[in-house]
Amino acid sequence: MATNVSIFMSSSSDIIKSNSEMLEKFYFKCKKRKSISKSQIPFDELCWTSFTITMICSVLTPMDLYRYLVEIGFIDTSVSSYCLQCSGQLTLIPSTTVIDGCQLKCNNRIGVNGSTNKTKLCSKKFTIRRYSWFHKSHLTIHEILTLTYYWWSEISQKYVENDLDLAHGTPIDWYNFCREVSEDVVINNSEKIGGFGITVEIDESKFGKRKYNRGKRVEGVWVFGGVERISGKCFLVAVSDRSANTLLDVIKEWILPGSIIISDCWKAYDKIEEHNNYIHLKVNHSLHFKDPENGAHTNQIEGLWNLAKKSLPNTNRSKKMFAGSLATFMLRTKWKGKDGFKLFMQYAAKLYSDDSTTDVTETKRLKSACKENILYFI
Ligand SMILES: [Zn+2]
Image (cartoon, rainbow, N blue to C red; front, side, top):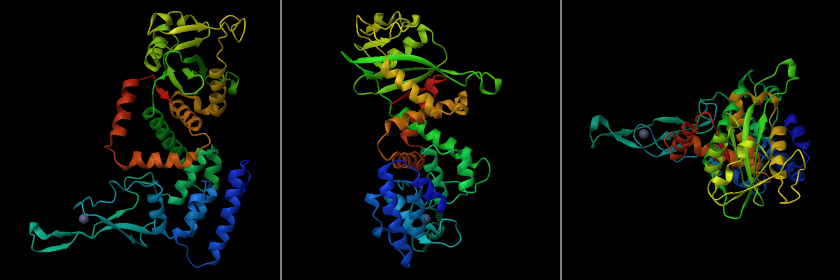
């Protein structure tokens, strides 16, 4: 508890600080009473922090914690509330034999040996974690929520390992699961940008470890991106090369016809105006940042690159990790100013609630269509 409070208090956000004070007062009030029901917690006023998580997991009974996680969309029960054996509706029951302190039980009556006259209770029991973000893990719900929260807050894996006293490697796995969800959110929320008269800045940039890192130069990844002026909507695509063919394919896929496209003088962009009624303005960066004649500049996309590079730790720039890390960066940008952890948990709950949902199928389809080029768009 002490560690959580200190992390939480070290945050610079005033909102989080006032939330902390409120939670602390509430927590100590709760401790004086014997039990607290979930209706007594000021959930509407809470924003999510590791302290919120600890407080909720400590003061609620296991059954109330489950009900609350369902209520706020951290567990999706569209599939998990039915019995696998007889499709009967499941009921929540307390249980001392499982880590969660409660289970789901089927009270449906089923025919014995196919008879309709003779029936018995199905009584099949299921974990509350079936088809959820918490499924197939030996960690407690508190630990998983905290781990996910730490990942969203960009806390180092080493710190998480010590703070939650986890086995070496556990945070690595969970951080990877989280990044996979990020990829899914980003891919499934893709849309084209630009349109007639709308200005789009494009640029390509290499992301990768620099040569002075332990004397070894690691191959980087080329990323091509576009930002729509005013709205700030953008796409980022990891590309295998910077050739005209590769970049034009991406431009035609993600930028709507009639857009005013601004780029630097990279030769691959020379034939943009031959496609989709695009208007193309160039800015020669070796001479100036803003073209004195047409006023073209690419300040907005360069700002995006700087933010992206700053947010991606060097170790995450290997090709394997890059996709998920970049998607996570895009997601943090998209959800800036919102309760990102809450939105993330709600998305993960939906994603894990059923393997056969169209969302997952769509992602698989997109992923295979993209092959090596991983498409991102926010
Ligand atoms: Zn049943």
